[in-house]
Length: 231
Image (tube, rainbow, N blue to C red; front, side, top):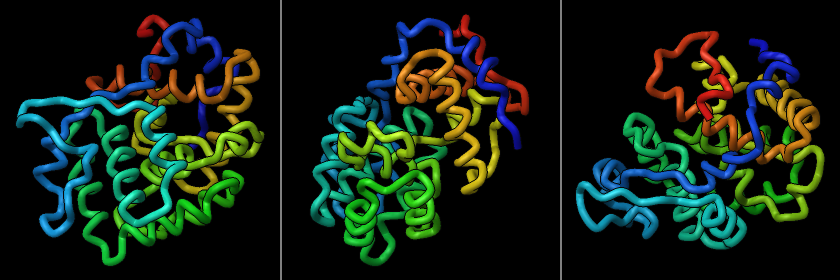
């Protein structure tokens, strides 16, 4: 699997304005309420005023929750918020996410991983999380790793970054399996694209997330990348 060239991706980014559009993601709490394990309390972030209600989760909230994890309960709340951010209004990814909290000792395992992962390099982070918790794959654990990093860590060159299905779709790689090799290739392309565009890497990631969301209603293919006009 190869990504487009950084020069091509840089051209497709468009202007910096609008990269903040994924600072908040709208999601449907009722999707989680339907499938959350009955013997596990529903995290506060997933509470809804009604069946048809929608809620929003921001990146600022995720950083606050992730950096504040110190107990099993904190970890479950953080996981729920990250899963909500990842699912948006799409129900299809919620069922798998809701299976994870039923794993024995889930909250404590998650809290331990978050604590051990703070300040690690991207490769170390992937190795730590990959396969550590059933039903939590790279699309989710790269969010958990990123949003739980201390602020100083996100200023380093070799930091973990988010990679999920939305970003893969924006890069024309829908359905690709996120292996450690693919993750490193993505980080290299992200860094080079950001350098060419003179954008922070986080802004490029947010733009690709936005592009992937725009394409969710389109048939997946190996070549479907969002043109700048979509932005």
